[in-house]
Image (cartoon, rainbow, N blue to C red):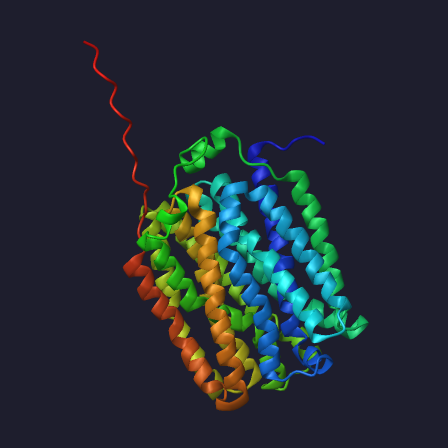
Length: 418
């Protein structure tokens, strides 16, 4: 097989990451699309479903920070391959479960394997793409996640209606193993000249040591931003399809026809906002400031979420969550680029991994809150809380995040000759 030239290879890598992220979000969203069927199969109420959802999120959160360190230590190539193979096997394994405990085991395994993929993606994009293209390239990769969310709703519904809910786990798992094979064949780190042009360092970059990284203000700004804002996107993935079925009266077949619309809107909005962010940079706006402006503008749309219980028709809920989804993916697509702008390339995997762990931790707490609200207080309070999370995260973003540079230790002066 002829080896692709570096500029062509980076687009092949981008396409493989896109496909991987499509499948990762199909795999994680299967549970939410099949929520009524899974609850019936394992005799669960909403609290039990929240527990099953949290098994995945807890394992995901526990492994995310370490995943970033592993990516910075061993490279994006090996870690993405391990992640792809691991989560694909976990997804397929869920099809053969007979008890709640077995299903929880495989959802936990999915949560352990997936975190390696996201810092791997960010590191690969940082190494392969220059700053002027980085937000767009990052958004194309990350768009695979919401394409996965779009595809998951009709695909999982069709597989479940045609062949039973277990088939909805087997097919994506097998597809993931094929993408893992493609990654094994094509991924390489960039040659030194490409790496130098994109990161300013042809070899190993100077970065923060792990203990020093935790003392940077911007790390805590990224961490808090994701801890506050991530629960809204996790709600869209884990609760929205079931909410439309149980609260708005849509059938599984109707969900297959329209449940994907918020995720398509989110994807288009996230890519568009990232392109806008890159355009601001090309027009001379300082790159980190351009990302902050984009994120703050999107956060202004978030309060529309509070209208959801007051407009109970299913299509009103879908319209509201089209806007909410745009806010969420604008943040997820561009906040990763903020990491790449604020930290040395040697640390981006670790920072994104730590932030992802805290974001998932926020989702765990919010899942418990949602489960209780759906059983007792009703959804109004839940949507009111969701409405203010992104604006709060925007305040943290502006106050805490800046460019972080490691302190360079000066070389000792040579002894003067007599």
